[in-house]
Amino acid sequence: HEVTLSDYYMGKYEVRQSEWKAVMGSNPSRFKGEDLPVEGVSWSDCHEFIGRLNALTGLNFKLPTEAQWEYAARGGRLSKGYKYSGSHNLGEVGWYGSNSGNCTHRVGEKQPNELGLYDMSGNVWEWCEDWYGGYSVTPQRDPLGAADGSYWVRRGGGWNIGAWSCRVSLRNISSPGNRVSVLGFRLVC
Image 1 (cartoon, rainbow, N blue to C red):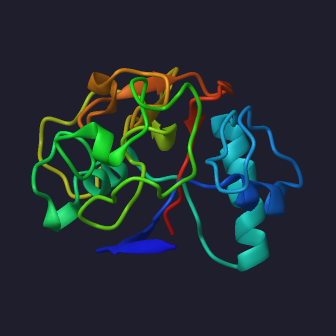
Image 2: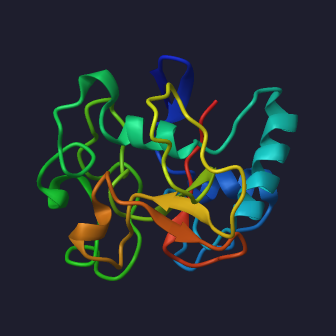
C-alpha cells in the first residue's frame, strides 16, 4: 500500500496495529483494532520497528522527512491547494475532535487526498524524521530539517484536536520519548 512520489514511495495509510504486531510482537495502542493506526509509540519505538522491518524485508523503510510529509499531504504535483489533505472540508478527509467520538478510526475510511493517501489530516499525528527548527531562507529540493534540537516534528493533527491543528501547513513538536494515544506514524521507502 504505497504511492510513488518522484524519489520515494509513501505509505497509503498510517502504520496499522496489525503491521506493528507482526513485526514487534506486541501492541502498545490505547485503542485496539487490527486496522486502527498504531499509537502510543515514541520516535525511538518507530525506529526500532523500522530496523526490524528492514531486516525482515531487505528494503529501506524510513520515517518521512517533514518536507516529504508536507509535499505528499498537499497532493504533490496534483495539489489543488486544499487546507486539509484532500479537501477544504476536514470532515470529508479526517477524524478530529468534532467527529471522532474521542477515539481513533480504521485507516482509509475517509476520502484520500489527490495522491490516494489517507488520514494525513486527523486520526493520529505522524512522526517525521526531522528535528524541529526554522526553515531555510533559500529554496531547496527535498530539504532536511534542523541538524539538532530538543524536539522532533509531528504533522497532521489527531482525533482529539480542533480542525485548525489538522491543516497541512501546521507544524507541531514532540519530545522523542512521547508515547501518547494521538501519535503514530507512516512510512516512506
